[in-house]
Length: 84
Image (cartoon, rainbow, N blue to C red):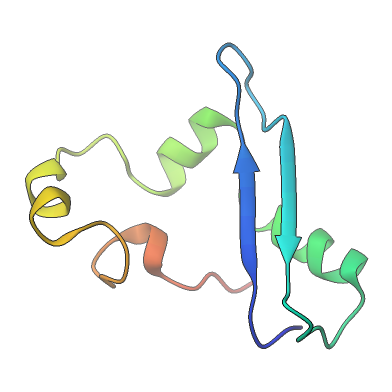
């Protein structure tokens, strides 16, 4: 759908769902913006509880993420590419 993308989600205290969401494709779009957004937003429940569940965030892995960082390590659920 695009060669490159960045997803932005913004949450506010007390809100179950994002108050803002956006996708930037840096000019690499191959499908319509609507198709990309519809696909991306359908991949998982974007509620706070949905993200905690899908990314398995209740297990204590903070020592590992603090030591080597939390981006770029394919052992973390949030680094895996999701496909339908």
